[in-house]
Length: 138
Image (cartoon, rainbow, N blue to C red):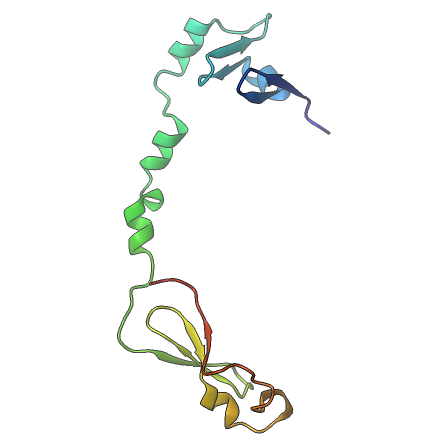
């Protein structure tokens, strides 16, 4: 089932009204342009609508009061750098990786060049120096 919509074009703006929302809620208010649309039968007046939503928070107010959506929570949720890197390997794989303190993954040239085998010979590893994967967590 496709929802019917009504696009409205103004001088410097375009917006769309979902008719299902208009039928379900009885009103549509586009505050930025001062547009209020109500059903002719059973729709509220603008004053009645403003009174009914007076105690409700705006979306930005509801998001701001949640701790997981604050800048501090996002910043402190990132892994902090530490001085020691970790060795990472995969079971049954010959390559070894280093997980650096800032979150970058390093494929050390020595880990590839010292191994014999078709998939890990020096000729197939064409990088000059170590292979690095940057994730920008610093």
